[in-house]
Image (cartoon, rainbow, N blue to C red; front, top):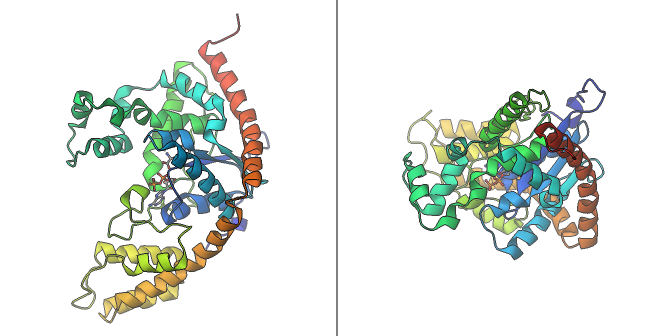
Length: 364
Ligand code: ADP
Ligand code: TRP
């Protein structure tokens, strides 16, 4: 496995480290999808890059959370970032809404973003479908949205979600954005908005940020319910904060099938998901043992699940202990984000000032 030491610091022409930027929405606790898809990458990058990580509370607002829940979720995620290994001295850690420059630049950037391209974004269509209770995959979703009377359910913040995300990234002029596979379309839009801004104003102001996967593919951590993706709204998650009993119970209840009927048969999706999870936490020879047992029909899913739970616990338990240690230390947590906001604002205000200038918003 690659370690921090394997990653060489990449230097820009001006001698500075390349900038890494990423965030996670404050919509609950972090699960294994967030951890392996995003947070563990954040941690691995922190020694060799100029890293800035934030809690996307404005993005969380797009799904109208309860105010008290939003507030406690921001705190949870902050504690979880630090507990998973993010060092506030090595990284800029901040809360998105603490940086007012982001909101202003979001307004400015929206002038260069088309409603049509936003409506065609996969994540928007999916969220709109969910909000309106539409099950079908039909492309008629645009008509449904426009015709719908309960306007707040599909709000304008949800539509302009990719603009805000692009601004999060561009305001830092980030080079790398470590995220899971599901965020790649948003990154593609970010690059498109950057190119459009540059070409409209005949400048080369913004670069084109890319995902960071340590040379591999972007990751999609599967759920325990046989589905392709672990996600908060799918209700199929193992959380970093889950206690031992809860985690074991969830794994033991994971969906499987009736078992292989003949040697070397194809592995069904739910069982493949368990192998994928094992691939994240178990030794290769352990995985091979269960692959072989599947191939010769001697596999017992109960044993595989016990092993998987054991190996997952080795990763999550130390993190859980650290979360419990710091999550009520309000003084420490607020010091971290205060310092983070100050440092993030230095970068953000410089970019905003230059963007205003480029767009013609200048002092009289
Ligand atoms: P959720 O889908 O649970 O609401 P978020 O959308 O807040 O999670 O995701 C935060 C980060 O975690 C993003 O970088 C996203 O790509 C990553 N992520 C979330 N779920 C997964 C998953 N199942 N596999 C890989 N990465 C994931
Ligand atoms: N959209 C991301 C998610 O759902 C969160 C996010 C907001 C983000 N702004 C970002 C991620 C900027 C990376 C960079 O997970």
